[in-house]
Each structure stands twice: as structure tokens, then as C-alpha cells.
Amino acid sequence: MEDEIQYKSRTKYKKEAEDLQRLGLELIKLSVSQLERIEIPENLRTALIEGKTITSNIAGRRHRQFIGALMRDVKPEPIRLALLQAKDDIPVELEAAKQTRMWIDRLLTGDLAEMETLLCEFPGLERQRLRQLVRNIKKEKSGAKTFKSRRALEQVIMSEMSSK
Image 1: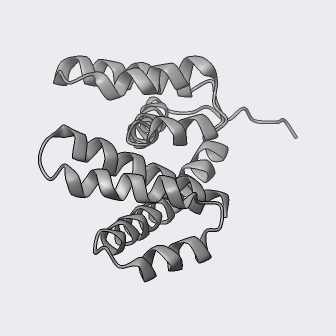
Image 2: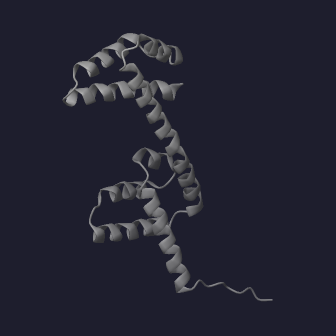
Image 3: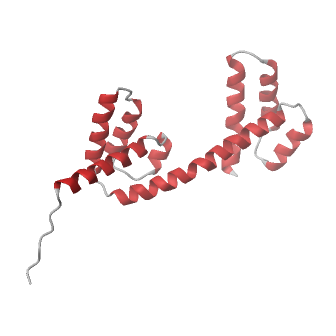
């Protein structure tokens, strides 16, 4: 019995290349932090990050083809699994942001019981820093400083939530 060599048709090669381009397009949609968690070659990672900034249709198509060419050197299955895991992480991040906004709204009511509840749930938070940020948000109702204080408060609460 002779071993027959299996040849791929040109159509099969093209379909595989298109699949890799679609996979690359899905990877482009991920955030930079999610891309950093996926094990891919550095040149592919930089191409994916650059792909986020390209707005021209023609240049974007050319860049997607380039990403597809880079992905031919990589096994796609581990990347697909990591992509599924990264997509599963998104709702957790959204839920944490939603919970943070809820805590900020509760703190802005001015009720001291809400502050105590937050401090009991997250003992690593500093009472003085929280009060200062809440006071700054209330004092600056308009202007960019409100957003700065609000972002700082969100960051303080989010970091404590993630460390818990």
C-alpha cells in the first residue's frame, strides 16, 4: 500500500485564510489588557493594537490581511480558547463597574450609614479619603473637576473590590 499525499485545494487554503482574518478581527475588538493576557507572538500583538487605530476601509482591509498572514504561523485553537475566556471576562468587568457606580450614588446621598456599610464591606478603604472625594464631587457640581474626583473615587472603590 502506498501512502497517498493529501493535497489541499486552493479553495481550502483561501477559506482557512479568511477564517484566520475573522479570528484576527475578533482579536482586534478586545481591549489592550485582554490582548496582553493572551499568549500570542509579540509582532501579532502589536499588529492587533495598531489595527485598532486604523480608520480607513482600504488600509483596514490590508491590515486585516496582514494579521491573517501573521496568524498562519500560529496555531489558532489556543487563541480561540483564550478569546472565549476573554469574552467571558467582560460581564464580570461590567458588573464590577455597575456595582462601583451604585456605591458612588449611595455615597452621594450623604447618608453616613452608607459610608459605614461600604467601609464594613471593604475594610481596606480609607474613611478620610472617601469623605474627601465625596465632598469634592458635591462641591464641584459642574466642570471637569467633578469628573476627576468621580473617576478617583471609582478607581479607589474598584481597586478595593478587585483586591477582595
